[in-house]
Image (cartoon, rainbow, N blue to C red; front, side):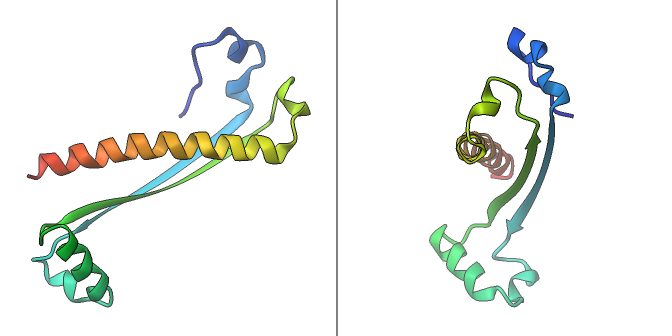
Length: 110
């Protein structure tokens, strides 16, 4: 469950009742020493392993879906502008959060 907090405006317009937020993250570990590296993606795995010195790598892919019933005064702004602004903010936030998470996770296995 995702809750927005911090502003009286959020409570006033009941923003927590106006959106649906879904996130799916997939973490993938590529190990150059694993027998699984002999699958159909062998070329891309070998290339990635060469790039990081033959060490394994962790990658993360996240899909975020947010649906919002836009409250006033924002409902007067064209939807395409709101979506582009929201997408840019979500992408920037996810890159920071996900990047830090994956880096810290990788440190646990060094």
